[in-house]
Picture 1 (cartoon, rainbow, N blue to C red):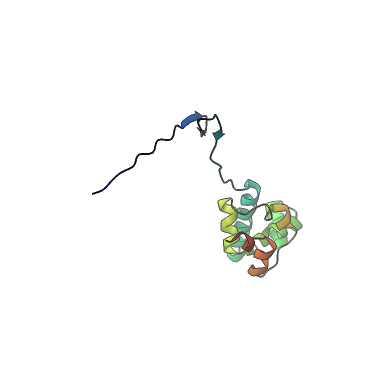
Picture 2 (picture 1 turned 135 degrees about the vertical axis):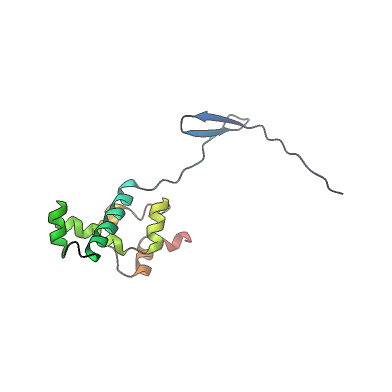
Length: 130
């Protein structure tokens, strides 16, 4: 013998351009939170991996040569290029938008440790349980 229970919750869904909002009977509106990646950080990561690939393939023999060809200041190129050394889980968190406020582009351009465990500690990544 099986019994079923039906639960009715009087909610309404408001459709707005680009998103939906749930409205409870008491008039409270809740919009689902979206996780957004930092576009500047994602772009910097893409540049870092692109530049690293060009160095690995031998397209450029030095950072100075690449900076000249890309018309970018050598120091900036070098700082961005270090992002290619980030731990894979930190890169994934950035791309997913779950990196947290501790992992920002200005902070990363200031320098990151080479050891992945230290990178996670600095980024407070392990503290969040990832």
